Image 1 (cartoon, rainbow, N blue to C red):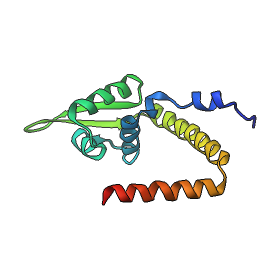
Image 2 (image 1 turned 90 degrees about the horizontal axis):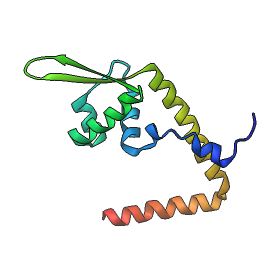
Image 3 (image 1 turned 45 degrees about the horizontal axis):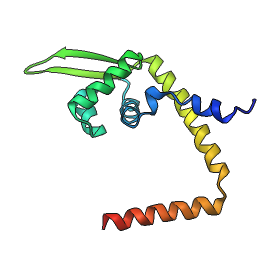
Amino acid sequence: MRKRSKRDIYGSLDKVFHEPSRLAIVSSLCQSKRGVMFNELKEWCKLTDGNLSRHLKTLEEAEVVLITKENGSPRTLTIVEMTQYGRAGFVAYLGALEEVLSTAAKALSREERTASVTAFWSRGLEIEQ
């Protein structure tokens, strides 16, 4: 396998998936092949109605998700599910992300990685207290 340049690696991070809220949405949808109700997805991803709707519109336009509305009483249920195209694209994105992270990790020594992780989590715990 030919080694890709850094530009190739970063360029393969699909922006449709790479935005943090959309990453959370798609990761959540991967847990169910039958789809997830809008309100569950909103709760899991900690998003507002409007914010979730905006991100779902972007994902729907990219043919990553399928949104269906079912008439129920007293409200209409909105179900969101990944398309096969969306699942394939997300798997490709995860592979690219894994390559980027692996390249970054290899650039750091083992001591740097250990010291940095320890310092990061220690600082985080101090902030919470």
